[in-house]
Amino acid sequence: DSIGAKMANSLKVGSDFIIFGEPTENKLGIAHKGIITFKITAKGKAAHSAFPQSGESAIEKLLDVLQRIRALDFGKDPVMGRSVLNIGTIEGGAAPNVVANSASAEMTIRSVLPSKQILNKIKTVLKKKVEIEVLTQSEVQKLFTVTDLDQVVLPYGTDIP
Image (cartoon, rainbow, N blue to C red):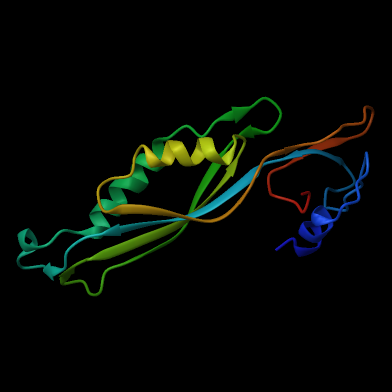
C-alpha cells in the first residue's frame, strides 16, 4: 500500500535525488508504468431463462463492454512499450436458469498514458446501465537516468511517490 512512501511525500522536506530500493536485478530503473485498477458493473433485469425476453442480461452487457475495452488502444511509449490490460475477475448471475440482473469485472491496466486519458477512453465504450469504479491508480513515473549503467523499465508500479 506504499504507506511509507506516502508519509514521506507528505513531509515538508525535500531532496534533489533519492535512491529507491526496488527489485530490479541490479539494473537502474528508468521508468515504471502507471496502474489503474477498476471495476465495471452492469445492471440488467432478472427473468427465468425460459422467458429471456422478460429480462435483460447484465452478463451479456458486461461481455459486450469488455470486448470493446479489449479493443481500445491504451497507448505505446518508446521506452516503456505498450500499456497492458488484464481482466482479473468476472462475477455475475444467480443461477444457470436465471437471466442475470447484475455482473461485474475487475481489471488492471499497466499504463504508459496518464490515468485521466485511460479512463476517458474507457468511458467512451460504456453502455446504458454500465458503471465504472476506480479502485486504485498511480501515474507513470519517468526517472532521472545515469549513463553507462544497465537500465530497466519496470512493468509494475513502485513505491516512488
